[in-house]
View 1 (cartoon, rainbow, N blue to C red):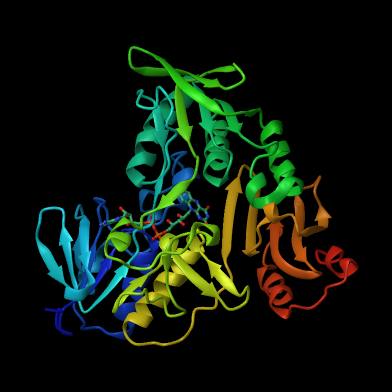
View 2 (cartoon, helix red, strand yellow):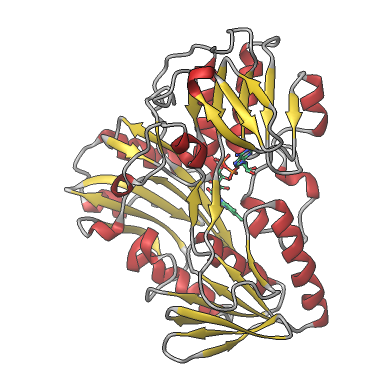
Length: 415
Ligand SMILES: Cc1cc2nc3c(=O)[nH]c(=O)nc-3n(C[C@H](O)[C@H](O)[C@H](O)COP(=O)(O)OP(=O)(O)OC[C@H]3O[C@@H](n4cnc5c(N)ncnc54)[C@H](O)[C@@H]3O)c2cc1C
C-alpha cells in the first residue's frame, strides 16, 4: 500500500544537492517531516575544496559544510548518516535500507551523486593507489601528501588530466612534491575545453614543473604490496610513491534503474530522466545533482552536468518542487576551477569534440587573463573567464540572446 501523504519527505544523498534541497524544503515548510539519508558518516557537504585548499591542509575543516552543524537539529531534520538505501519501491512509496528496515515517503529525492571510476589494470589494489571523491578520501590523501611535503620528497603520479586530475596535480605540486600527470590527449582538459584552452592549462602545469605524459596506463607496479610505479602502454615507467586516479565518475543510478525509473540514453549523457520540475518517471520521486538529466529550454536537449553549481541549483529546485512549485528549471550550467594562480569560471554548454564549434578569445592567453567563447553558427554557446571576474552575467546574456555576435564584439569583450 502506498505510504500516506503524512509520511515524511525523504532525501537520499549526502552532497550539495541534498543539502540545498533540504534547505529549500525548510524555507517553504517548517513542519513537514524531513528525513535525510546518507551513506557517509558526515552531514551533507560539498566537494570542490577536497582537491584544492582542503587537500593542501590550508582550509578550515568546516569549509566543506554548506549548513552549520547546529542547523540540522534547529530545523528538526532527521539526519541519518552511515545509512544506505538499497532498494526503492515506487508503487509502495517505500525505501529499504542496508539493514533491511524500511521507510515510507510522501515524496522522495534521489541525490546520490557519482562514484569515481578506477582503472581495471594490474596493481590497482596496491597500497598508495587512490581515488578522490569523499572527505574521507581527502583526509587520507592529505595525511600522505602533507608529511611527504614536509620531508621534501615524494613522487606523485596523477592518472587522468580532467578537472580532478589537474587540480590534484596542482595541489601536490604546490606542496612541493614531484608530480607526473598522465593523460590520453595532447593537452590536459582537452575533452572539455578543446585544444586551444587545453594547451593553456598544459603550459600552466609545465611552468610549475609538472611532468606531463601522454599514454594509456597498463599497470601499477609495487613492492611489498605498496605502489612503486606506473607503467604506460609505450613502455614508459613512472616512479610513484602515491597514485591518484582521476579518470571520471559514474552516476549512481542503480537504485533508480532497479526500480524501473526511466534512464537517459548514453548518447545523451545518461542519468535519470527528469522533467523541468525534476520529477522522475516514478510518482513523487525526484532527482537532482550529478545523476539528473534535466531538460534545458535554452539548448533544447537534456543536460546532465557533474558540477557544483548544478548540484546547488537543481537541489534547491527539487526541494521547492517537492512542495508543489511547478516552475521549470532553466539555469545555464556553471562551474569553476582553481589551479595555482589560475582561476576560471565557465558558463553554458558545448561539446568541443563535436567539431562544429569555433573559439573566439578576448584578452591575453599569454597573461592568462581572458574570456573564451565557443560559438556554433555564430551564436555563443558557452564562455569561460580565466582570471577575469564578474563577467558571467554578461556571458549569460550573450548566450541567451541567441544573436549572431560579430567576432570583433567578442574580441573586445574584456576591453
Ligand atoms: C574532489 C572534487 C572536486 C570538485 N571540484 C569541483 C569544482 O571545482 N567545481 C565544480 O563545479 N565541481 C566540482 N566537483 C564536482 C561536484 O562536487 C559534484 O558535481 C557534486 O558533488 C555533485 O553533488 P551531488 O549532491 O549530486 O552528489 P555527491 O556530492 O556525489 O553526493 C552524493 C551523496 O549521496 C550518497 N549516496 C549515494 N548513494 C546512496 C545510497 N544508496 N544511500 C544513501 N546515500 C547515498 C553518497 O554517499 C554521497 O554522500 C568536484 C568533485 C570532487 C570529487
